Length: 402
Ligand SMILES: *Cc1c(COP(=O)(O)O)cnc(C)c1O
Image (cartoon, rainbow, N blue to C red; front, side):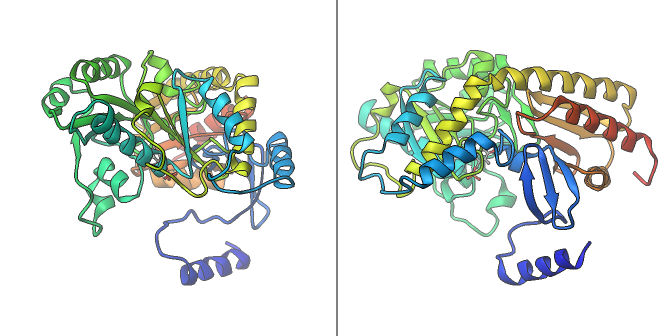
């Protein structure tokens, strides 16, 4: 490591809250699927800021939209009508069966809005005193107190209790457990179609369809958290569309503004009646600047058919990785995922492999110490993916202490 890096690291440790176990890397520049560190070393970015910069770093068209809007209007608050917000809602809702959007600033906030809407819809529209949210073991829905309660991982809530009440967890792929957990107090079932932070765990389409049918039968709302798998990454615009689901509410964020902080909750017209004037709000949500950028992002995703691209490139990469798994069954346990959201679960400790990939110029995420998680920009060249697979195989075949 260089002196410049060491100095920055020391300052960070002194000045910032000790919440992040950071990678040993300081990034200074990005373009497309490339990143450069403070020493000028180049990397292929297979993480995209955790599924955020789906159109690549400093995308020219997105930059142009940002600059144009920045010279016109940044922020006036939601007390005013703002054209970019309406244009974004129109584009976003054209991708789904939902009828109304609420804009906010993060994935956790989008889930907060979804939870609040579900509860208020039950009380005010369905006229039932139902408030409980059921989510799944292994899920991740955010770090605010309510979304931590929905997440339900004890290690994440350690020291932060009491968490808000009204959350319950069931194992995934177990319909009987869910049936037993739904009571008259249940407002909604909340799921990720592909559990991202859980280690890239896709839930089965059959089971998800049964969950949705059960929700309909018991008068419970069905919510999909699309924060990570949404925006074309799964091979469809929304991950729920892989299985013909029609969730009442979805929460979204990460890729929405390609790196500017933004989230959105989308609901059917029926369920959106749960909110009334003044019942939910945010100062920054859907401001002109982020909305203009997000509208450009969605426009490009649709124009360039990035869902189809993710399906094709992701499908071929997955095939390649599965073939590698067949050659190296004692090194790779499983390859999972949809589209360009892939997990490679290793049969050996992951950290040395992940470190060696970094050394050779490939950035990905290591989940639960064994799963390499790939969330590349959807615009990445296929050659980069092929070269990554070859490098990984080389690392796994070389016995350099791995
Ligand atoms: C990242 C993530 C969140 C939380 O989003 P933040 O913007 O970090 O609040 C929620 N749900 C899922 C599925 C996520 O991947």
